[in-house]
Amino acid sequence: MTGRTTERTTGRPAERATAPATGRRRPARSYTLLAGCVLTGLIVLLALVSLVWSPYAADDTSGGRLAGPGSGHPLGTDKLGRDLFTQVMTGARIAVEAGLGSVLIAAVLGVLLGLLTAFAQGWLDDTLSAFLDILIALPTLLLAMLIVAAHSATLGSAVLAIGLAQSAVVARLTRILVKRVLTQDYVTAARTSGTSWPRTVAQHVLPNIWPTLVVNLALQFGLAVLAEAGLSYLGLGVPPPNASWGGMLQEAQATFTTAPAGALAPGILLVMLVVGVNLIADGLRDTLDPTTRRRRT
Image (cartoon, rainbow, N blue to C red):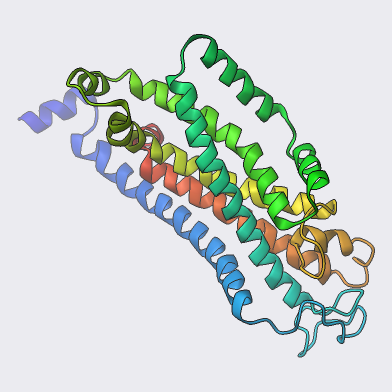
């Protein structure tokens, strides 16, 4: 009688309302995360292999100018006779290093600045917030030019510039998340019981903000890879003979009609890496953020 009454008043059986929908959506999220891991894993594997082996040396020009794909050169050669597959492998390593290095700098500086601004009050809060706004408004390319002018065009300079630019974004997000957590009752109860601020941050604040930060840092990784490719395209990235995907795209412009592999190979791999990281971020958002999961279901 109870089951029929529920069906009569609601117009549908209670069992049909939730179970099928949940069963349909969970695999989709798993497939998104799996697809992202596969795409990103292929690039990371290529980068790791380049650390211990490559078909040719980075400065080997014995392949002949603009040779087509063949047994000795799977992707052909560039205008200087260098093996394109070797350059693609080196570019994968540089892209992964740039993404990881920039995200590490952004995470350390961003979280520290975000915590500082979240606990600041009065004029100090206004000053730090204005400082973050200035950093966010400062273009990454302009910051990179300033750092390169002070040092030189290296991968380290590009990573430092990208990391500093992204740290402001991470700091602002951290500030918002921390201020939201500090208003919760369990934080008030911890402070009332005599828990120190450092211990409160370690036990209550950071565990509640890290899922959102991880998703944002995954997105920042993809943006850092694109930023490094853009800097290398402009000549502000790694110097020769090391090859960056952005530098390969710039060099292949003039020979695209005769040797399209020089532009297609780094371009496709760049898209694969960025799309793969974005899929991972989307999958992590569904997995780690229960609020988003409830909204989508």
